[in-house]
Image 1: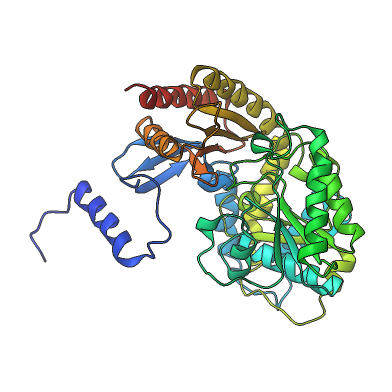
Image 2: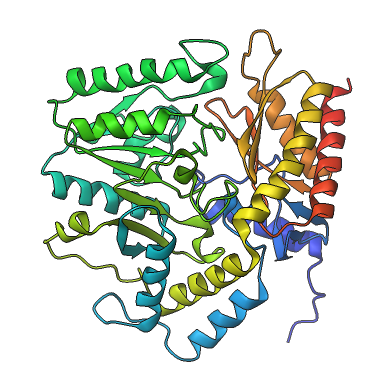
Length: 441
C-alpha cells in the first residue's frame, strides 16, 4: 500500500484537462480558454471541481429543461433501472407506447406516429428518409444559417461552413435564404412585405436547383446555432404553402424550440398556426437523457415499408425519463412559465442593449433569448472577438451562457424552464457585470 498523499484537487483537475486533450477528439472543443470541469449540478446551479458555483442559463444547450437532476426524473429512472433496463424496438414495452401517445396528444395537427431515436441528428435522418420514401423524391430544401446535426446528411443540411467538415456534399440538398430579420437582404427593418421575397427565393431554388419535384422543406422554427433567429410573421405559412404546391412536405425542427421553450405553446411552429407534415424533437424531451423523436402524419409513417430498427431508441429507461419529464412539464405548465420568465428576461436584456451599444439586437421567444454582438449598431458588423470576451466575462461572474451565429458573435441564453423570478434577476445582474467588464478599457 502506497504512503503517497492523495492528489490535491488542483492536480486532479489538471489531470482531467490533460486527459481531455489526450483521449478525446479535439473537434469537440469545450468552452473557455481554461475549460470548466463540472463536478455536480442541481436545479440551475452547476458546481465545478474547485467548488465554484455557476448559474446555468444555457442548460447544456437547452436540454436540462427542468434543471439538473430533477428529483422526480431521477427517481423514475432509478425505479425503471431496477425493473427493466433495455429491450430494443424488437419488443413492445408500456413506456414506449405511453410516451408516443403523449407526443401525439400535444403535437400540432395530424402528427400521430413516432419513431424514437437517441439524438436530434438521428431524428433529422429519420424525418428526411421518411419524407423521401413517402414522396418518392430526393431533393430537400434547407435554410442557410440552419443547424441539423453531426452526421454526413445533417452536416450537409447545416448552413454554417465551420460545421461542414467535408468538401464533398450529400446529394439532393439545397439551401435558400434564411428569414433573418436583423440582416434582411430585402428591407430594413424587415417586415411582412419581405415574405413574398423569401417565398420567391424558395420557388426559384426549387425551379432552378432541383428537378422541380422536391421531397421536403426543412427548417428550425427558431434557428438555434444561427443565433436564435426568429422569422417574420407569415414566413412559415408561405414556405409550407410553396413546398406543398410542388408536392413536397414540410419538416419542422423543434429540437431546440420545442416543449414550451418558446412560451405559451408546446412547439414553436404553433405560434405561426402551421401544421407540419413531420416534426423532429430532442434535447428537452427527457431533461438530459439521450432521447429524440420524429413524429409524422399516419400516411407518411406508413409509407416506410422497408425494415429498420433502433437498438436504443425507445428503450425503457429513456422513455421513463421522458414520461417523468412530461409529467412535470404538464403540471408546471412550462409553456406559460417560459412566457412569463421570458418577458422578465427580455426586459432586462433590452435594458442592457440601451446601455451597451455593441449589443446590436436582442431577440428570441420565451426562454430562448439572444444578444447579437456587433462592432457598432450602424454597420452591424459581427464582433466574434467581443462575444468570446463576453463569454469569458460571464464565466468570471459565475454565469453559463452559450455562443452562436455564423461568426460566433451571438450570445445565447436558454435556462431551465423552472427558473425562478429571483434567479432570472440574479442572471441579469451577472450579465450586466460581464458587460461592464468588457466595456471598461
